Length: 215
Image (cartoon, rainbow, N blue to C red; front, top):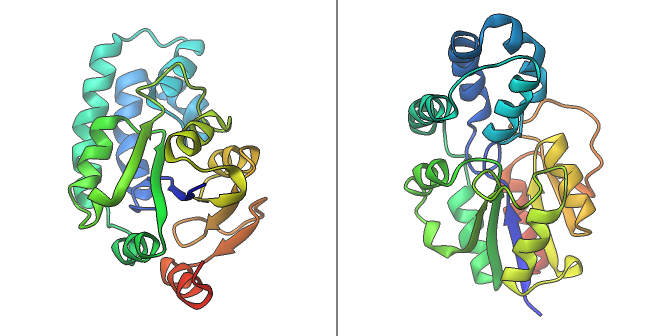
């Protein structure tokens, strides 16, 4: 049975969430109207853009979905070029690879956005499995554990030999529901209570842990 380490993307590999917030508070009110935006703005962190579209539709949005996606893709190019890769990410990937972990990525982001981020990683080729929940609507999104369970199956691991690194409430719920060891990454997250099994403040903390214990 393989050991697996599964990453979330936004807020973990790349500190994109503050940059997304900067742009979303400008283009979403223009796209869907301020009234709808203010009703949904606290519900969108860590969600797929399909979920955001459907939620906005519940509040009365009448917008062509193709235009909506094209607008998001245009801003994604800005976000993923401006946001910083989390310090230590490439080194962590190399350490995990050295200790024979199979690496996966499960994200709410579109596959196109994942490709934008992977171009910026030296160690992108070390990932054996990447899942965009947004592009696979048959798989229930976070906080459901379906994506993480599918990743474990594809990587040949089971929950007790899997570690998941998450930073959002929805993601932590999904990881915990999968029964894998769940680590909350706090560097890009506002402080607060978490139900994760373990918390780390930096990627460097995690690298040190793996080097000491040689898991």
